[in-house]
Image 1 (cartoon, rainbow, N blue to C red):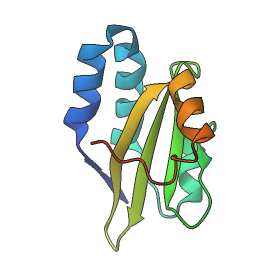
Image 2 (image 1 turned 60 degrees about the vertical axis):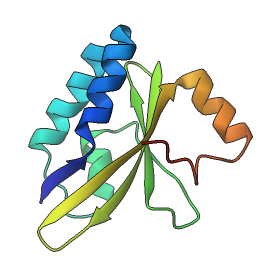
Image 3 (image 1 turned 180 degrees about the vertical axis):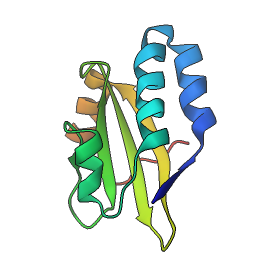
Image 4 (image 1 turned 90 degrees about the horizontal axis):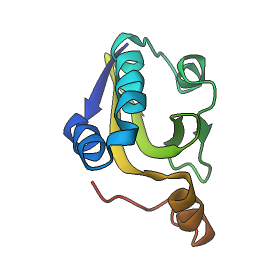
Length: 110
């Protein structure tokens, strides 16, 4: 199914603010553009380092740039397309900090 990325501009804005992330985020975007996901498990076929968050959150964490950055997205599989909502992007250290506060299930800054 076609992937509908919601708030692609968020990714572009982050890469402008943090130029070292630009190539890695562009690589992630190029993979999403050609991905064909029918079920959540297919996300891991495109991004084998992706981790699904529990608690029925429908959230996935992507490792970006050799694990230098993390991106939390919410996913929703529809009849004809998959919606991916960018909820949070940050460094690995920032991700560890939100996990320590158990915020990875609720964070939504974009």
